[in-house]
Image (cartoon, rainbow, N blue to C red):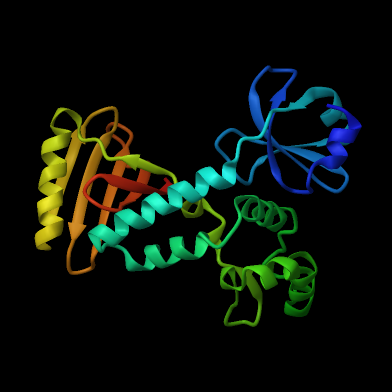
Length: 245
């Protein structure tokens, strides 16, 4: 990578690049005096290197329009919730996310971890640092920030962490997927309790719908294990990734 390209990179914005040592596609960001390579599948962890190392060992890849792709997912997710009536609180979150720019969201998240303060930092010092870093963004996206009960300024992390990615997938229940999805559809329509116990596919998958809470969940757990990938169900077909455990 040339020094000119490096200096044109927006501070703390996440870029896709090729690691010239390993040949792998990775994510990197430019910091004030260093560079950062994110660990695979992680948004907060990785390795920090000097600028000379970054220039010698990384090549930026052409950017695709992440913002357009993200907004397309947000539109799809909100349409699912409009039809199903599930999760009104998540629908409100997704509608607010539509007001944001993907690259702004990623930059704010990177700044958060680069300037993370310890829980023991005095409130005045915390708020002063927070305002120096985020005042521009707080003015642009006021709904994504708040002041907690102790008077500390904070990010609303749902706007920046896993849920905000709006990663969607079609639920899968093995050979009888279509039959199960039809059952889910009618139970959602009629607002009747419904659950699918663990079914062995590539994962141990399960589903639960609680009309009294107006919520539904879908999970993919590693075979014979209580850990895996967890989603909320947006309708009878589509799930939104929430967290790994």
